[in-house]
Length: 291
Image (cartoon, rainbow, N blue to C red; front, side, top):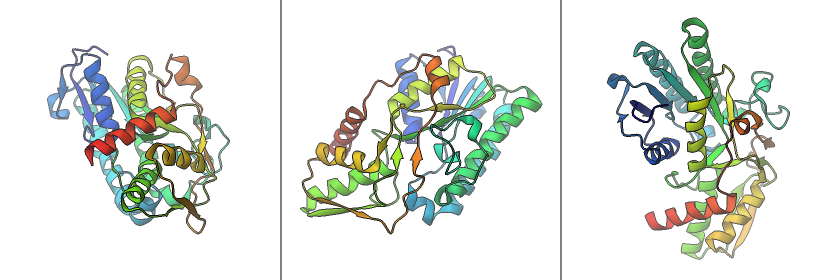
């Protein structure tokens, strides 16, 4: 990927899009353009609405429609615009709820999705399938990647609709501010998740764009899993919250385990630069400074 080439980041205002823009700027890319009308050579697709379990339960139609519309409008237009290469980012929820761990791309489509995120995941699967269809029919170099749960500076903070890390951090920050003696978190705390810091993910995206040209999706993840309970205890320590954590087991846990097989990515030479604690600290400091 020539640093002087024109590059379009679809969703440049999203958490992942912001991370990719920062990574491109660090690499010396000077030709970031506003859209496909500028005839970019390379496109990163980081757009599309997303949210945590609560958002997926409340807004399944909105999340599905937004991501379907994005795929249907952007991918064909990228082909018509003569884009040299496109990277479409999906989500780890595209894997079946009970597929073998770590999740390999061979497990895609083999079973039912996790019900709470099925509508959103189906739209992401459609985007991946459309990229593969353009590869087969038109020879377009459209590739796909599946990131683990992403967080970091720029992530939307909400105690209800956000993904799990910003949701937990928002609740604990609010509890510190108000002096509340407990916070209530969804589920049992037992599910295990793989978390990826946004700047690490962005660097992986640039590497994949440069080095990978295959038909199969590429998983992007840290290679480590933590239980929701372990993650919450880390956040409690970083935030300085001393109250009680209560678990509401009447609320859904989501998939029991989500760990990605990242062997193909690591074969390209990528390793995350931040531990989970380091990444959580950076996210907390950003949140504190921006509040």
